[in-house]
Every structure is written in structure tokens, then in C-alpha cells.
Image (cartoon, protein in one colour):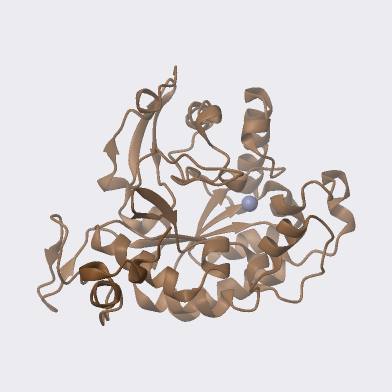
Length: 340
Ligand SMILES: [Zn+2]
């Protein structure tokens, strides 16, 4: 892909500077192309959107990440030194400092071992969601295994916290075109929304043809709101931005470029992080070079980058974002040629 300032002519460096690096104190203030639904604030005169951006955390330990699934057997999770409690509490402190409430998608196994952490997250006003029990790729499970795993995780978290869990996020965004059946099961289990579809290309996940803004999907069991992870458009491709490894590993100019582009389109930023991503001191595990590079690059930078992002625009949980209200009906199955 040619970098935008390498194209020359009117779309060269000057164009890049003017459109992507122009001073912008509030990401909701879109200078040249305000989205139609923007309303002007009576106090500031700036356009306002009827939603906030979303910050979400996938609460899992470093040894549960998919990068190490080949070498870390789930039956041995108990033998690793856990760091998820302390790392998640650091995120809670950061969110408290910034006055932000987030969505925390919890691995059921973690909830069982750290119930007080789950209660503390809820007590601080954050939203609790479900991130499966065993953190397995959904497209490698049978529908029955998925149902059982998800039910176990949801009820574990609900019993510990005493609140209802309405949101789901698949491990490694593994709701893809061949595992779309999972959406109907989520409805059956009582979820009202999902945030597992990543409209981009990746070796482990991705549904590049899925919508890039929140939508309501009608499954055979009822409707569900889907909040796709943020992407921006570059020359006909959906580029991932502002979450996980993309926030951590890619240079900051890329994130800035992406989120400005997303804001210009009037779309929300849906950011996600993992507690292990802010922990440079975590034990190093063996594994493939690509897995180690993905997992260990820039661990010392994530916290600062996340903080910067939280200060750049209003962020909150899915529950409080207002995004469900703007989700439009979309026939995902027909769009992807899938038999529902
Ligand atoms: Zn995960």
C-alpha cells in the first residue's frame, strides 16, 4: 500500500498534513465534513454526535492469549503465575483518573479465580460482559460446545457480580463468516449485543465485508446488536485501528490518521485493550517468533497511548455509549450469502 504522502500531486504530503494532522482539540469537531446527524452544542457551538466512543477491556491473563494457545495447555493454566488481577486494577485506576466507565469482557475462568476483582469492576460503575470461559476460537468449536462454554461463563460472572451480563466478545474476534451461527446462540442465551466482528482481514479473524458501523442483525432466535471493531478506509480496504496490537505496535501517526478518518465519517471509535498489554514485566513464554513479536512488542507503551486516547475524546462503555440507538437493521446473512 502506498503511504498517503508518497502519492505526489494534490494528494501528497500537503494533502496529508491538511487533512490528517490539522489541529483538532475535539475529535467530535469535524472541520470540513460534519456528519448529517451531528447537532450543534448550544454551549460550545461545536457539532455533537448522539453517541460516545467506546473503551473495552478483554480481561484475560497473559498465558491465555491466542498467541500462546499452541504451547500453553488449558489444563495447566493453574500452574502459571497470574497477573491479571493487578493489571486490571491498574486499568481501573486509569479509568477512575480519567472519569471513564468502560466495558469489561471477562474470561469465565478468570472470574472464578478472582471474584473480588469482578465485584470491584462492577462497583466502580463499569459494565461487565462475557469473553467466553475457556478462551477458544469459536470457529473451531461445535455449536453445542460454544453454547455450553458461553452459558458457563455468563452465569459465572452474573452470579459473582449479581448483575445481568448483556454483552459478548468472542476470543480473538472469532465470529467470522463460518461461525455466524454463534450469533443466534448468543440471543438464546440472553445477550442483547455482541462486539466480535472485525471488518478487516487477518490470519486469525476478520469479516472484511461486514458493516463498519453498529447494526442490528436478525438471527433465527431474535435480534442482536453488533458493534463492529473500528476500521478506516484506505484505497478500498478496511484498515484496523485504535485497539489491541494495532494501538500498541503500530506507530502513533497511524492511529492518529485512522481515528481522524473514522471521526470524519461520523463513526465511533471502539477501542479494546488487554490487561497484559500494559505489563512489560510479564514472564516471557516461548513460542513462534511471530507470536512473540505480536505479544511482546511495545508493552511499555500501551498505557501511555491508551491514556492519550482517553484524553482526546469522550469514551464510555457500550451500555452508556448511545450506539445501540443508532444501529440500523442489516441482513448480514444475505449480505454474506449465508443460509441462516
Ligand atoms: Zn481474548
